Image 1: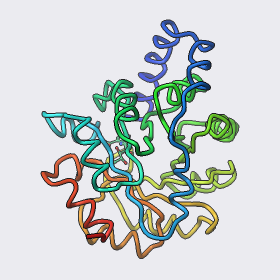
Image 2: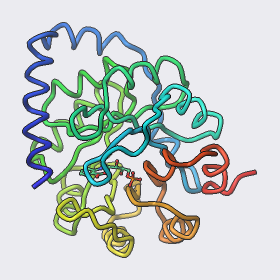
Image 3: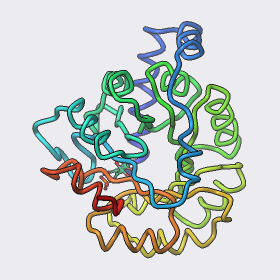
Length: 258
Ligand SMILES: O=C(O)c1ccccc1NCC(=O)[C@H](O)[C@H](O)COP(=O)(O)O
């Protein structure tokens, strides 16, 4: 299964990072670096918020774009007033890099999500040390204890955590862990199909005091309107924006602003 392969590859990658930058050194950098806070507060405002993703490739699609001017893309997203930028840092399947995260956070004054497969505390300090305002915690790869502990650690470092669920039992675990923001991934990670109805059904299980984000496979204005009507606080859009030749216009259209 792809998720197991991703976790194995992440384990090896982070062991290598730890051998080069010890945890103590990373913790000092993380604690001293000032990053943008307030992502959660932004989502609490009325309206549908947009998280725009920067990624060159994915397991389901392979290479999405050959040309990858990530800083220029980040500036276009900023001009379109996105509420956060999601940056893939996983190198093997998504062709991501930590450098992209750091540079985007240094050049663009918008909260940045480290989009990766967080499996330990080292990665949370690493996210903060490289400019992240938000991290992702995927319920399918973490225990109940890790979900709570990692979210608390992220918050203690001034970041927010999106707890990602794919099905009913994962939504219940996310709620039980104390998640303040739940991301529902529309993509089935076994066969890569995308199903909005599942996302809209799962939203109904989440209490109103928890913020919700619909992630993956969002392509058209109809998709966006359906998710807005279902009451999501935000959408996370990757491939559709990466392939768009006018990203700014598309985001404004999705947000329904002139
Ligand atoms: O995108 C994939 O193929 C994928 C496969 C396995 C695990 C995660 C995967 N994607 C990560 C994401 O969550 C997406 O990058 C993100 O939600 C944006 O999705 P999209 O708009 O469909 O590019």
